[in-house]
Image 1 (cartoon, rainbow, N blue to C red):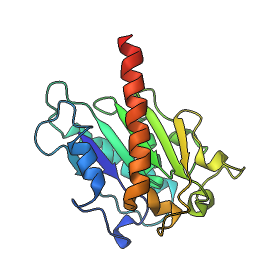
Image 2: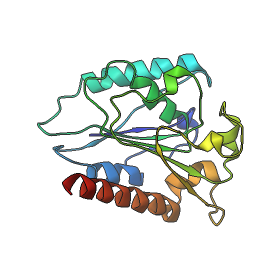
Image 3: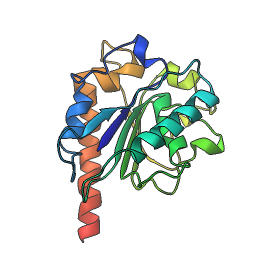
Length: 199
């Protein structure tokens, strides 16, 4: 199963319906042992951009996972945008019913508090950012050049989206070209990982 976790106030911006290409990633290459519809949208409604909102959302995410009847061999993946990535990280400390096989965060602001350090139950963590994303910078605790876009616990990848007509904070999701760039990079990372494990 793949859970899509949008960022703060995602409802105001739209674009998270089944037509979103990320649903296809969860129902396709990330399917694993899942049967049926393998991608779910995690809907959270923060009252503001606060730790308490993200922690409450993480607790709801934990309950959502606990209520899932996983098929034999089915994994758990998450693709999270902006502070949705911090919701995913916070959930990893709350006793999830199963490990997170793959976590992909897109334009996640770096928060230095303990709640947002990845838990040991995250097996593969990929942190992807668009260059010159000032929204990501503004929402981060780490303000040094590029430190706001990197997570020392992840495999990091930065993409220059300046050729996109969409703002950097959104381009990795809604610009087909640049979404395809990080997706192919991620697939290469997965192939290399599987190859090294087999070798």
